[in-house]
Length: 254
Image (cartoon, rainbow, N blue to C red; front, side, top):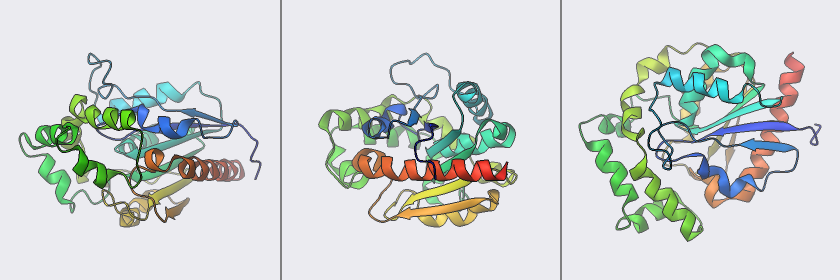
């Protein structure tokens, strides 16, 4: 593999946060990786006027964002960010050379209890404010992170949930009927998961892989749901390897 080839990676964050979730690992990528971590409209805690979009509109927003980024382009989604990538790929697949799907939402929404609870009136609003509360932070810190992280970053991470305008609407827009309508996508893809991920378990891959004829998977021992934050060195290393491999596969397929 040509490890020195310039590669562009655009990372899309999950619910209740923004592009800042990748800041801990961003500086640890090698020089040949151009790393982009935008914050989606409706998730930006500094810009409360940004409109919340539909899943389809987020896909189009993403297409506009990456269109002029240098190729090869790798698109990476984490959690809810994977939903926007799955929708994006339905009509904009030619804009990317590969995708990394890191512990993404989408599959088994008909079986998981948490998304169903979040659809009940007021539940998602209460949930995001409980997570944001400093009173409950010690509990959620232990659940979300395996290693101690910077206290200022931790404060921003949790408070972002309470400030996220789009948080509740996402649970109402995404359901299993949406997922079942997705058609198979011809693009090199890698499923990246943490072995200890309790929010979205690695078994999610079994349903998701049906959409990607050309896929591989990598389950990392010791990772939970947020390795870009609590294990940034390992995260940058593994994502760089995957992105490099995906560009090779994309070149061969073309």
